[in-house]
Amino acid sequence: MLKILRFLKANIRSLVCRYRVPSRVSLADPNLIRMSLERLRSLPRYQDKKCLTLSGHKVYSQCDEDGIIREIFQRIGQTNKTFVEFGVGDGLENNTLALLFDDWQGLWIEGSDRLAGRIRDGLKNTIGSGRLQVINTFVTRDNINGLISSALDEREIDLLSIDIDGNDFHVFESISCINPRVVVIEYNAKFPPPMQYCMSYDEGHKWSKDDNFGASLKFLEEGFSKKGYCLVGCSVTGANAFFVRQDLVADRFLEPYSAETHYEPARYFLGCLRSGQNPSFKTLDRSMAIRGL
Image (cartoon, rainbow, N blue to C red):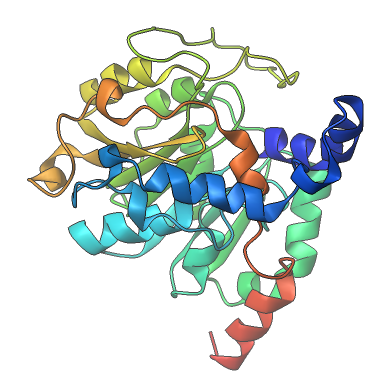
């Protein structure tokens, strides 16, 4: 999904010209995007105090995932503040970078040599402190347990985040070396509930900017339930779904824990909304040095 958002941002100008959108209502106008987001959040379906949507905000995530993740852990608590995320892109827009400012630690796995190299060059202090490990390899369902086990000793971790534009569920289903309390996973919002869809496993899959990726939310709801997780919410962009382990849910989240309750359609344009100034590796890396971490 990171690739979808980068594609939109890179092509927004040509889209405006092609479809002759007046400049005053440009698709890139942050005020219009913000207004759309505020209107969505004012809808009655989001006003229940157990709904996660109003807690959403962006620091380094695609849209509102940072705030939702923070709220989930406000409700269930934290343990070892350890995360695993694969498909982290260039390291400046993902679901766990913000957690490193809160003294979390964890593992990033990225398949691109170029992007992994940028992360290692930009976060030398963070990596050197031991707070972050970076593995540069393409994730498959056959290698994922070995990759995680090579970096982490813990079996229970607080957060697992998956965004690999294709085999997401197949890889998750194969993980046995860790028992995450919370899982964030990309879903294919083209298929609303009750539609069932999951792409066939393809070890060499590379997303072609089409609808052949991931799984529908209903498929994930049922698949995660078999693994002991409840669907507790989705990002307002229709990009990511949030699952909490069943032993931790209690009455903390909006029921029923179904795709019908929590589905959000594809609103990827909301991911174009910026959060402050442009992100920089220096912001984290220099703060780690100052805090002596």
